[in-house]
Image (tube, rainbow, N blue to C red; front, side, top):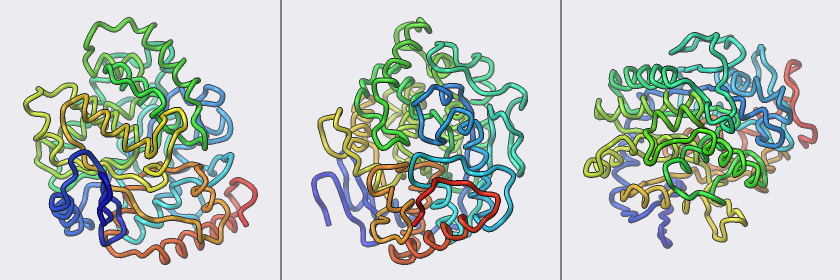
Length: 399
């Protein structure tokens, strides 16, 4: 079924983007279907003091809890609800961590991520890759205009590039970075792209004015030159996830791999930062191997401040227009309105929406044949398992 710039694929996955061509979509989806069990799957965990600003993020109901959100989400994705974990999920205002959705989807696909950690306050209690000294800690708040040293950004960028350049299979990049939509807002703005009213987040109603003020303060304090480099932008107002992901992306392109960026505006920011470093005549070829993968909840979101429906699609096309290229996006078609669990039905009213690769992993599961009914049943069971787990504390009101 085709409508405007949307194509509903037979699997139930939604394809969207500027100049969408169904034949191209079918070819790209078939390529991922063939290689799903043989992909390089990375989850990047990163810390930023931006997340400690009151009201900036719902990825944990307090600044203290958001300090361990990333490591707790990764533990849930790796181990599932039934196994004891070092870090409990932080309490949320509503909903449940998208890591539970990611666990169900990745368990069905029989794939596990390689974890890359940067800027966390905790030592992850599971195997992980570190590209810098673990003592460096989180990036400074973006409002400082001096989030990271340039040497740190270059180290993370180079480390990600070396990993990407050695890949022999398609690449899936996912993330968990509390406060990351704010740093995405900041670098996109620093590139000269007006994204006011187009940036979502974990809140049901994103704190747009707060984010706008932080970005304004950070860019003013940074005193960047006109047309700044991506390294300068990330150093000024970014977070550790961004240079790692940009490096991975550019290395994977050099090794001629297909790439799925699992997330929303944070992945668009990564793509924009990469395109900023590429000659204009090479950009169309560069994006030809890249897909954005997210959830239907994010794609369906309509921020009132944007004045239009499907805000994320508008944002994606807006960024593509800036670089005079076309992006292609896919969204999982799974919905939770028939779930038995209130924390899952909360997704249907605008809570959480995306994170920890939930959209990308879900759409791969959908392409592989996991039906809507089966996905709901599996997620319902895992929520019950999580409730029964003695070492987990999550939001009240599951039933």
